[in-house]
Figure (cartoon, one colour):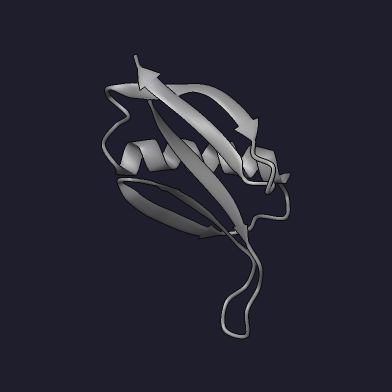
Length: 79
């Protein structure tokens, strides 16, 4: 089973707050959007990740949870 993990990245001197989606296939990072709560933006980013990794036509998000470290995780499965 494949999962997409979404991590909150704190601001640095050169970059603002960001969210990073990643799996074995690579990563995708975007700035934190203040108009969405973390879980909403995390799911949106995970869906974008599926499209960018060309899994969109074959897979969809089947579940969502939160890891003990606070990261959101999304399971994906065949459509």
